[in-house]
Image 1 (cartoon, rainbow, N blue to C red):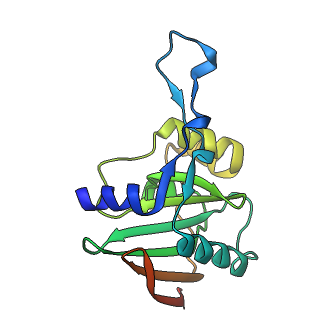
Image 2 (image 1 turned 180 degrees about the vertical axis):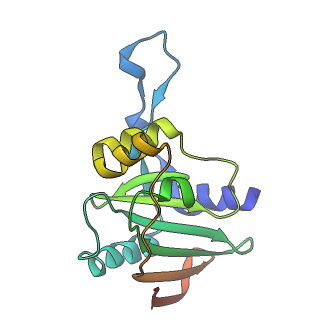
Amino acid sequence: MKYILLGFGILLFSCHSGKLEKDNGNSNSNTVDISIDTWIIENPQLKSELSDYIIKVEDEIKDGNFIEINYKAINDSTCRFVFWVSLDNNIFTYHIPHVLFKFEQQLVSLHIEGLDIFKINNDFILEYLKKNDPDQYDYYLQYGDYPISPTGGGLQWELVFQNDSLISKEEYFTQ
């Protein structure tokens, strides 16, 4: 697991501390508001591939949907990324993101495979749904659970990097 965290921290992303603020300016608060704008992609090839993917799936992205990325460390020098478009916001409960960030004005969810001891706070999920997907929010309030995710497919890209360089890329459609 340490290679997953190390690879995640060093290889791809860095946290920009300029966006950290005390909660409501209250100096007695220990809460720090970390914006989704604080995460960036450092690897230029990964950045370019994600940009190309967003352009290719532009018609699939609808209000409330976002790009999902699954990251898996294969070994010390090799990792895999899979990109796809979310069909709904059930990602918060079924394929839990570890990081949410904006890339080219598009919300992106990053799930780190093997790091399933963390999850998104349910209060955050409800606030996000209330703002971005009122139908799912109302469903949750009425039934105390999230609606069943629709089935469907779309374009997925699987990228494999070794020593920070892209060594393979597959494009396929899921059903």
